[in-house]
Image (cartoon, rainbow, N blue to C red):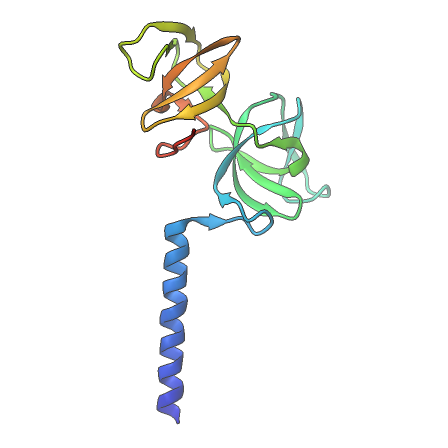
Length: 169
């Protein structure tokens, strides 16, 4: 009987390890939204308090003051989302301050936007570092951006707010 119990325990441990490994391969899902973690969103509000913990009773560490700023959600708790910015600094923000609208921050100064997804196509605009642009379609290496009335394609490597392997239609 003891041998059977041990065998069942080993089988159960192997099954748990396999499920954990499969979940790591697929990616973690948020406990509140069942959406992938991490994921990118943007600030819906012009101003948003960033707190030390997921409630109004936690101290405000700083305030985000930039509408449409891309953020990355790394955790969820109730109506709160733990976010980080492009510098890796973050905290807890109420979900009502966030939007699913995708934006990116330009990380390369004088980044040319191209008419097509290649460096040899004509330039449609040049963006300064820190510009926030709306994210459109993305292929393996380029994303279509809209900023200040201009549209064009830019390399993913010059942007923060989109995953390196992320594809968008």
